[in-house]
Length: 96
Length: 107
Image (spheres, helix red, strand yellow):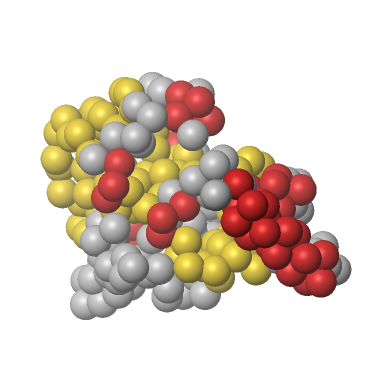
């Protein structure tokens, strides 16, 4: 699996964790356990009442166990999205 | 390993993967590995109103998706919906049984 994702190194990715958080950052590295290193990352906090809030996090290492999805971010389209106008319930936790 | 080969045969087909957080993603299966991690291309979210979190097609004309391709960890998958006719349940049932029988024989 790491092989498939190593092509994404140095490109922006969106990660959804098992507790429903959405972290966006530049993928700097990963291993066969899907632990990832994210540079200059931020979290998009979704809520029903207000638009999406972006919280700067910095450099993060996320343990593979806690990762649900790794998405390739199309920067062009992503920056064209007005996230502050989007209201949605936060994602649920992964329940095994 | 049996289901790994089953999914390998579905590469290139459009499937829907439902996750254990109720999020459902539809996309073309690009690859699968031994852990049943999936890589999907041209991802669409089912019920986008409720889940605009990663893929967002704008309400206006142009389709916008900030995430086009994604990797899904096998451990968070609840269901995989396979297009009708792609899989013969009887053949699958037989194969699961022969696999179990093989395991028994080798023990």
